[in-house]
Amino acid sequence: MKIVDKIILTHLLVRDMDKAKAFYTDVLGFEATQDTKWGKGNRSVFVVPPGGGTYIALDFMSEEKKVDTVRTFFISTPDVEAAYKTIKAKGVNPNSEIMPYPPGGRFFSVNDHDGNVWNILQS
Image (cartoon, rainbow, N blue to C red; front, side, top):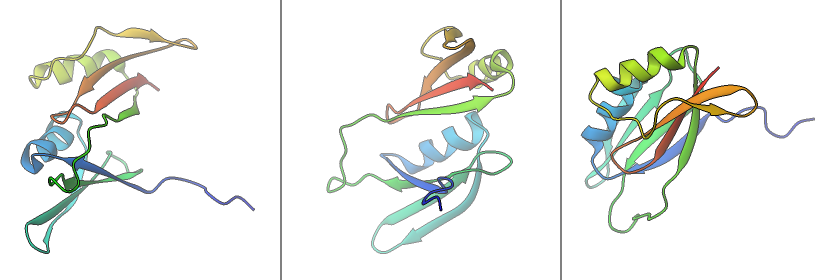
C-alpha cells in the first residue's frame, strides 16, 4: 500500500493578496476557486492550474507568520516559448532567457511579488 498518491493542496504566504491573486490568475493562468475572508482580517484565496491539479492556498503573511525563506516551484507547460512570450506580454520580466534543463528539457523562471521562484519547464 502506498501512503501518498499525490499532493492536493499547499499553502503559500503572501504579503499582498490582491497582487498575488492577480499574478497567479492573470499571469500564470490559474483559476481562483475560492476567495474567503475569515476571522479577524484573515483571507485565503485558493488557486489551481488550468485542468486541475494541486491547489495552492494563498494566505496573508502577517507579522506573526512572517517567513524570510523564498520557495522554489516547478510547473510544466506544453510550449515553453509561447509561455515565455505570453508572460512577457503581461508585463512580467522572466529571470532569464529560456535555458536548457537536464536531461534535455528547457525552462525559464519568474518571481511572484513575494520573491518565490516559479520555474516553467517544457513538458
